[in-house]
Length: 388
Image (cartoon, rainbow, N blue to C red; front, side):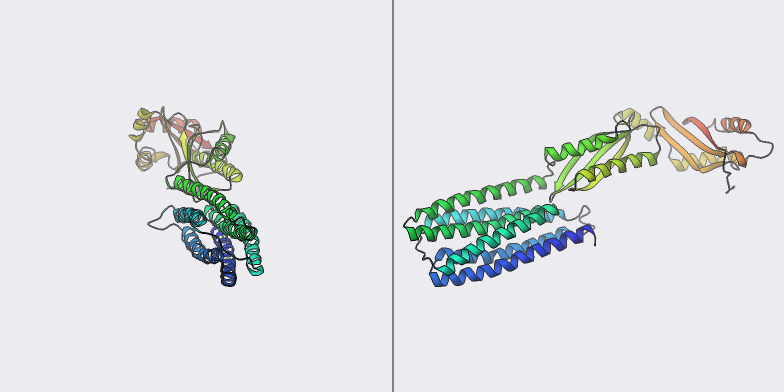
């Protein structure tokens, strides 16, 4: 089972458990409200049942967001999780406004019954348990959608606290306690909702991760200096995941494979210290070519490998029995094009020496005027097996 399947299965499990408890608690509250005549408890029961819709929305959003990239969504579907999270944030805001307005406009005349009180206490305990369970799962898989849904579960326990205070306040002759508690809880939920909306909107406009995450990424990237120097590090978040692209400036004389190795080394270090980094794109720059546009334009005018190999094949046709043109190394440098050829000393003919071969290659390659130099690198252990 891959990472995406594991995350999706955990999210489904957590949300379905929460949805089952929401349904059970909603039915119990409505039954208790019909006995006690508490309009607040009835409204709270309907609120619990309405949570089933948000649980369904979470399931759908999470499933879509974990689909593989396709032709129309080549960077994946994580934005759907951000959209679901944004919608949940607005739902939280509406819940807060509903609790606040209800407390101001409604006069509490509820009666205390053991069934009502026990149902409210059970709701508070169960919803707090769901909150910690869901939030732990959200933190584990770095899903803002699950974390927001966890806070949505907590609003149910908070609203149940308001109803409980309402009942106790009415019983003690202090009905005003209901309004004060409801307003405080409404403000708390509003703060969570606004924070969620603001954070999700920041994701949707490709805002960089927080300073701690960026500092960790930069320090990891610098760990391979002076072999490679990071520059132009850019990052954005998507559903709690970090997408990163950066440039690594390396020495102009290293091979392409060594540059690739250094890029993989930096990538591994970043992922090791930042579990929420989902994707890293690293571009290798030669340190002397990184910024000079004139040099870049001059290099762009040089011929490509296929043309160079065609020229070498014609000009060095008398040397093909010991030179392997499949291993030509081309270095496009700020000083010009350097061509390195691999020659096999064991493939030389009896009347040939390495000195004469070097002189012959030098003479025959003089017509390659676009090259600054043509170097001959000798392999003295092997021989060229595929002579053409």
